[in-house]
Length: 171
Image (cartoon, rainbow, N blue to C red; front, side, top):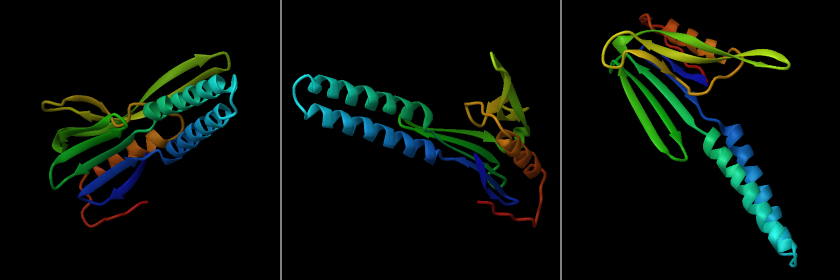
């Protein structure tokens, strides 16, 4: 997820997982085309080819449905709103909150343990301290490693105080 617009009146955070989506489409195409190629050979290869095409293509499609989700968060001073948009294969969801109820953003963390040690994963969360939506609202559902969540939290917390006349556009 990255900051796509940062102006005094609007902050837009966006994530479109192009690499994962395109990679999974290639995965599906390879398995389906190899399965169809095997199925055209005839004999016992027909069954194996169909299983290969349906199994590989089905796994790829399942992964596509699970992992490819577009997320956009719009903080808008003029409308006094926070809009969180999520889009996946299954549909579109939009949640709106009142911007004046937003106190700050935080980084949530979770730790997982394995034989190789422990790893900590993070996700950015908006903290609304008033109104009907009071509570913790994750910007993204999944936790991830690295500094991405911290950068988003810093961007939101830096943007919250009014910064008149300091327009910045980041790509």
